[in-house]
Image (cartoon, rainbow, N blue to C red; front, side):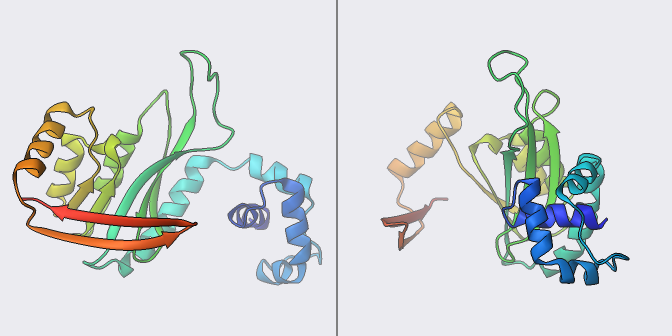
Length: 217
């Protein structure tokens, strides 16, 4: 258990190599020995951490994380916005140059108010899709009155229906691949005045950003 905890603690801090994780463990040796009640006054070597990490069943780890994260949802309130997004895991891509191209992704449900990941789903590109996993996350979300934010990939009738049936709202990006819907939205914005507008200015990373939001009914 200590080896797994040390490994993931290192990953979360940006230590991606096993030797780097070993160095982190040695620098925090007293704390680790005390926290995990180790019977010997030393931390595991990088090779031991590597062997243990390779034995971890990812599905079991995700289940354990989701059970733990479910305890954090008590902090969710009506002002919270929750985001769903998927990311491909580094070094999991196989056969990128042909039709058997495959990779592993993690789809996360993220609370914008608390900064916490509330739930995750793992999938392989050849066996499932981010759309399906996002829908599963919506089905497993038991709070009401929140706003889901998703990118244009999730502009799907089934996804939006699941969100509204769960008594939540959504903001989803729209692109030209949804031709009919995109045309309808363009027609509304060009021929109707907005019901309300808001504008914000932000200076970040050397850029001067002006964000304008218009609401049409």
